[in-house]
Length: 169
Image (cartoon, rainbow, N blue to C red; front, side, top):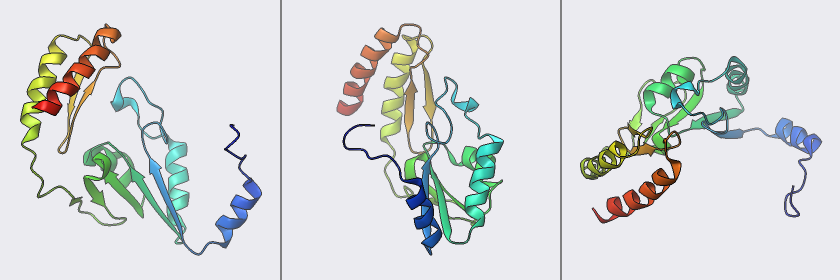
């Protein structure tokens, strides 16, 4: 706690929760609902997490969303198919799926994604010279993961250089 953050008054929180006619819950996935892990595929929801989300979603006064950098397939597989009334936001809002709706809405359907080809070529160059780094491609983004780089200092420098090259491409 710092001087600006007051301790949570749980009694007040519970009373406010019970008195509310409508409640909105927005949760980030990685690092909030699941820990950050070296291999992103390992960040699957626990049964306890699924149970908590199911309880929240069962209450008709609650509107519950997961907002994630994860792709649609991951969110559907591990959350959407298991929890009725759960809203999903994939790739940081690029794709939205309202609760109990089968289809995703592509928020970037009219966006120019031609930048990805140039960025990917730059990422590939730096990946080849930094063992342990990997490129993750999604529909709306490309991510360079370097937390498992064999030489983290070199990877940090490469990240700065790569960012500059992508910005000027």
